[in-house]
Amino acid sequence: MRIRAAEPAELPLLQSIERAAGEPFRGLGMTAIAEDDPLPLDVLEGYRAAGRAWVAVDGDDRPVAYLLAEPVDGAAHIEQVSVHPDAARRGVGRALIEHLARAAREEGLSALTLTTFAEVPWNAPYYARLGFRPLADGDPALTDGLRAIGRAEAAHGLAAWPRVCMRRDLPAPEESAAQAVSG
Image (cartoon, rainbow, N blue to C red):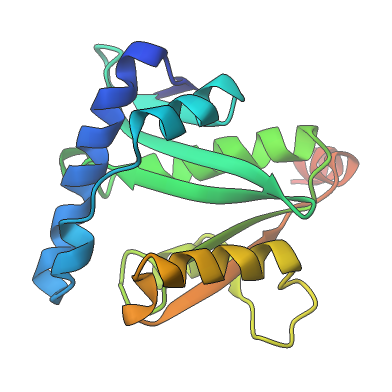
C-alpha cells in the first residue's frame, strides 16, 4: 500500500469513501452519523491545496482511504480519517496516521490530536491502541483550539454520543533517530 497526496480529480471518490466508512455506524444505532453528508468538495480542496490531504491507494493507484489534517495549537489535528470497509482491518488507517506522524515531526509539531466517539470500538479504543490518550477537561493539553473544535462538533450534532479529544505526543526528530538506532 502506498500513501501519497490526494489529487483534485479524486475528491469525489473521497466523499464516496466517507459515505461507505459511515455505514457501520448504522449498526450501532448511530443512523445520523451513517447518513451524514461527507465534507463538501470545496472543503476537501482546501485541505488538498494546503498539502494536508493524503490517500492510501491500492495496486491500481485508486484511493481506498484518506486522512485530512490541520495544525492546531502546535499539533497536527486529524480532522478526518476514513477507510473504505473493503480495505478495513488491514492497517490502512494506522499507515495513514503514521505517515502524518512523520510529516508532523518534520514540521516541528509536538503531537497528533483528534476528536472521536468514546464508545465506538473502531474509534477511541482503536486510537488508544495507536498511542493516543484521552484528554480530560482539566488537562493542559486540551487547548483552546481543541475546545473550539469540540464546540463546533457539538453544534453539528456529534455530541449526541459521548465524544473524547485524544492526543499522541511525538518524539522530537532527534529522539526518533536515536530510537531507530538503538531499536
